[in-house]
Amino acid sequence: MSDRTLSGKSSIAGIGQTEFSKDSGRSELQLACEAVHAAIIDAGLTPSDVDGLVTFTMDTSEEMEVARNVGMSEISMFSRVHYGGGAAAGTVLQAAMAVATGVADAVVCYRAFNERSGNRFGNMTGRITTLPPWLSWYAPYGLMTPASWVALHAHRYMERYGVTNADFAPIAIVDRANAATNPGAWFYERPITFEEHQQSRWIIEPVLRLLDCCQESDGGVAVLITSTERARDLPNPPAVIAAASQGATFDSEMMTSYYRDDLTGLPEMGLVGNRLWAQSGLTPSDMSTAFLYDHFTPFVLMQLEELGFCGRGEAKDWATVERLSLTGDLPINTSGGLLGEAYIHGMNGITECVRQIRGTACNQLGDVVHALVTSGTGVPTSGLILSKL
Image (cartoon, rainbow, N blue to C red; front, side, top):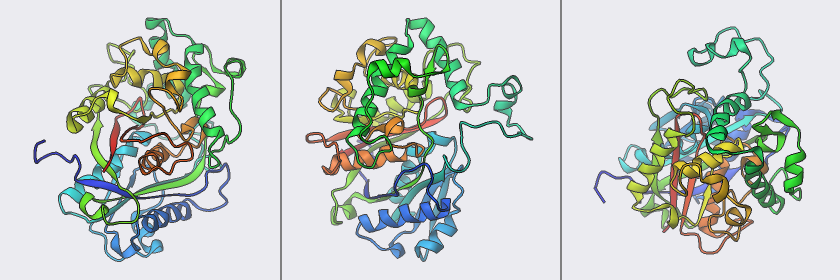
C-alpha cells in the first residue's frame, strides 16, 4: 500500500443513535446531541476529547450548537458534505482524512432529522419559490419527488434488461425479514411475503410499489472516528476504515441525471466501488455483509452490478432472497435497511456494520471480517469498507 492511502489508519471507535420513530417529540438539535453524546460515551471518551465534527449540508443542527450543548471545549475541524444521502460515507471519509493528517484526533460524524413529523422529503405540495438549476427543468411538469426521479431512471433499466417490479421484491422481503427480528426497527415483527409486495399499491406504475419505497423517519445517528492505534485501547473493538471514497461522474445531477447517453447504470457508484476495491486490496467476494443504500429497491439491483457482484443486467436473477438473507452468500441490510429499520439518510447502515464487526448486532452473522457500506444513489455518492482489526 502507498503511504498516501487512508486504508487502516483510522477506525470507528464509537457509535450512537436515538430511537427511530415517526414522531420524536423533540427538536432535531436534541436528536443530534443525543446521538453524538451516545457515540462519545460508547467510545469511552468524553466530550472534551472530541475536536472535530462532520455532518450533511442538509442537517439543521449547526456544529457549534452541537459542540456547545454536548460540552465540547475546542474544535479544530468542522465540515459538511453535500448531496443528501450520498453524504453518509462521505462524512466518515472527511473524518478519516482529518485524523490521518493530524488535523484532529477524534471526529464525530452525525445526522439527525424529523423527516416524518417535520419536513417530509416525499411531500412536495408546498409552494416552491426558487428552483435550483437541476430541478428547474422538471418541477414545472410535476417531476418533484424522489420516487418520481428514481422511477424515471429505473424504467429505462427495466426496459433494457427485461426487469419487472416482481424482480425488486427480494430486496424488500429480505429487508423486512431482518427488520422483523430487530427490536429497534420500525417494522419489528412485521415481515412481508412476495404476495404482499405484489399486492401493495402502486406509487409509480410500473416501477415502484409502496413496499419498494423507504420510510420517512425521525431520529439521529452518530459515529466517532479516531486513529486505529488509539482505538485499539478503547472499550469496544474498532471497525477499521479499510477504504473510503466519494464519487461523481460527468453530467451528475441531484437525482435527475437524465441527459446522459445511458440511464441503465449508476456510474457514481461504479467509480466509488472501483476506488474502494483498489484502496483496500479486497474484492466483492471478500465482503462478509453489505449495507446497500435502499431508498428505492431498483437502485439496489443496479448497485450490485456497479459494484461488481454480478454483471450488467444480471442482478434480477442474482439477487435472490436466499443469496441476500442472513444465511446467504451476501447478507444485506441486516438491521432491516432504510426500508425496514429507519431512513436516517444511510447513517444507520454505518452503525449496523460496526455492530456486525464487533459481534453485537441483533441479527449477528458469523465472524464478520469485512463489511461494505454504500450511500445515496442517483446522486454524487460515497462508500466505505469497514474491517475487523
